[in-house]
Length: 490
Image (cartoon, rainbow, N blue to C red):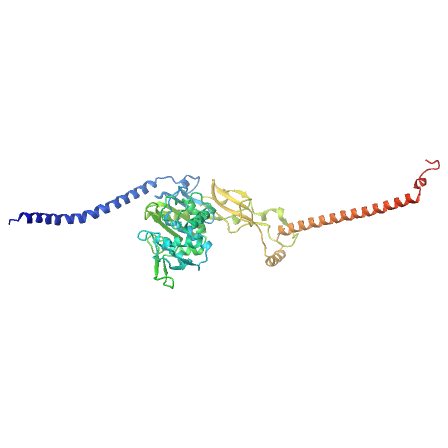
């Protein structure tokens, strides 16, 4: 078959198109997929390198060795005491991503009733990227309660919720950010600077594992926030101010029935941006220990395995010691100076006591007798007389407050009567002693002042009478000297 020259060119073009199109269809996706795959491999390689980084707590004397993990920075803190059990680069300044939201939620709980109505402004809703930023789908102008907003923030990681909460509390996001930085400073944070209420990337928005643990310690002390941070799914129903039902779901794999479900979890919050990589803050409780774990700059799913490994390390290698039960050095009741066979100012309890709830955390290889202690009279709670700080081989392991006993009069009367009948030893009530001493001092001062006043008054009166008599005698010309002179006038 002979083709016309024009048709020949068309045929060649058609044939070329038919042959090249399939190649383009397959080649383009491969080239597009190749870049993320290469990038993913690069991030994983970096995480492997980070496993070789030194873990500072592994260098502590007689301290259990912790796991080597791929996170750039990580901390395991005991929440009741603030004791650090594991630390790796805990003061490195890194991007937190969405774990920022636990600080936003903490401030909201402290500054707004849960039934407050939060209006979602156009700026709050539309300043985020709806395609890439986590959101719950609320529309500008719609209203929900603060409680619903917090669930949206912590369960669905909704970025517009962070914006709206900030505007509701402070009037603007910038003013709320100022409040965030102030709160962080109050909690003891030194390596943080917050710019957004939701953690969307900003190069000036950063924190450290240590600072985030301090924030988490306050966050997980609130029962409702713990509940929100452990909720997998939440629904915001249609209402007069909401046009459509919103269902938010957590991506946290530590939750029940998820891939890395952790039995002792109290709550957890995830975070991710391409700059921050994976971040995670979590809390777990078991055997008298309440542990907080913070993971910064890790690759998925290692943020979950790192957290589980650190929780396992903490619960397996450490134990809580009740100070009031173990201590003998600071137990005032054992000091015979305060003892008496019978009460001086009425039946009473020991005048000072160690807070029975205070604990320290020690490695399983250590005992209470191994710790060193120091009294601090200046930086304790208002109701305490002093604070005892404990260290083990130089590592802080907890504190206990020494408190003035505050007895209930009615309860004390019954209890003390029972103790008296049993012939037990009693203690001087310091309040009664102080009151008696002060009252006695006031009484003595008043008595001495009164006596002095009376003496001065009496002396002045006698002197005045004596002067009058002397004047009268001189006026009458009576010579008293003659009654005292001798016969010779001497």
